[in-house]
Image (cartoon, rainbow, N blue to C red):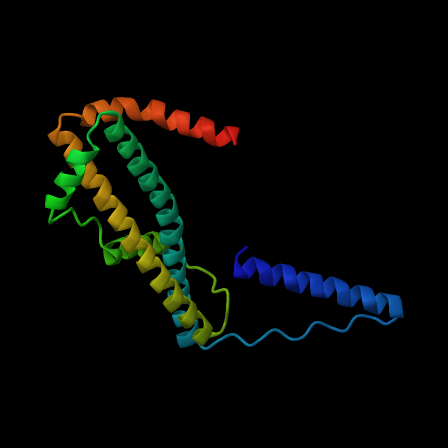
Amino acid sequence: MSTKCFLIVASSIALIFSTSALAQNGAAPAAAPAAAPAPRPQVQSALVNLTLEYNALDTMLHSIGSMRINSQDRIKAMNAYMQQKNLLDGFQTYSATVTNPPAGTSFNQGYQVALANEKMAGTPQPTTQTLDQLTSDVAATTTLAQESWNAQNKLFQQVSVMSAYLQSKNELVGYQQWAPAYAAQQRSSQTAK
């Protein structure tokens, strides 16, 4: 549950309990506290920009999660195919000679794309009026997203090296034809559990 949803639910529950307790005591509920004053324009602009950054990083984290699962599944399938074709020993030798695997997209490139997409979605409503808290959240999420992105890039490199090896053995097309049946078998064994 996101922090925003949690805060909404928590404040709603607190309001229900306080209204219920007052009604049981015969007292009228107190007036709601006055809303906090709107932040100055410069602060509001900073909050909006930080919210854009946070949303872009959050989107990246969600995307990385599904990409990581897909890469791990592909690596597992390629290993199974190479084992079935007795190519694993050759792959170990081949992969040891690869000194420059493809780098993939850098974190900054991915972040700029995610940020541009967030900007196209419109101006977000900041979830907090506390600049320090949002700055801290963005910093922590940046660290997590960058670590996750780098881990995914390592998986991408592994898939690329495995694909290049299979291509060098004229087995890439064979793997591509074999993989859908393997994936279906894996899904069915997962559902049976």
